[in-house]
Structure formats: structure tokens, C-alpha cells
Length: 129
Image (cartoon, rainbow, N blue to C red; front, side, top):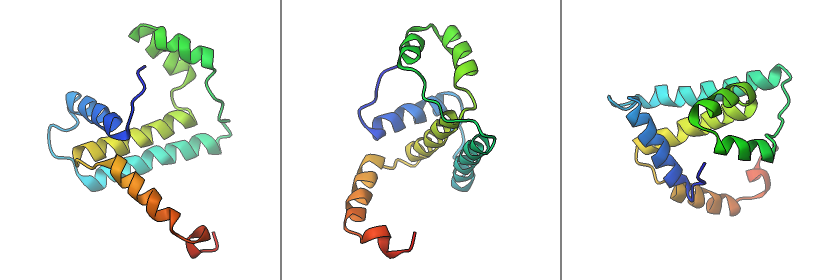
């Protein structure tokens, strides 16, 4: 797997894949798209609530999977990664970046600007928690 350099590059790759798979044949409903992000986060919560621990994938396994042909990768992914907490978190980010692609949001700039703004705020942003 090739590492992306920016979130905008990842956004474009995710969005173009979704377009190729037919998810943007018609304009997307923003509210529905946002709820799909919430759904993925809820799935992550359910995995966590069931007591599934968050176990990192071993570096050697990652390297081996990166070298596999698609059919073999898909099989290993289904057994080792699918429906884990990390998988659901990835799904959430994918849905967010897909929506950013569809709405042409420069997410790199917006994250950098928000982080800079947050750096100017008081501890806990003036709240108790």
C-alpha cells in the first residue's frame, strides 16, 4: 500500500474510488452522508462495548499483507481486520474524506487552520471537561 502525503490526496483517492463504484452517480444527501459517519462510529463503539480489545496489527503481518495479491489480501483482511475497532475507525475517516471530496473541501487547510485556532484557546477551551 502506498502512503499518501496529504489528507487531500487521500480524500481524492477515496472520493474517486467511491465515484467509480457508483456512490456519486447522483448528488449525495449531506445529512445522510453525515449519519453514515455516525453509524461507523457507533459500530466502533459496539465492538468496544463487546470487550474486543484494540490489538495493533503486527508489523510483519502488515508487510506480508502488503505483498499479497488482492484475493489473498481480501481473505486475510476478512479474518484479521474486518469489523474490528480499527476497521470501524478507518470506515469513519473514509466516509468523512469521501464527503470532503464530494463537496470539494480542502481538508488539509481546514485542519491546519483549526489546529492553529485551537492553539490560541485556553486550557480545556474554558470548560470543565
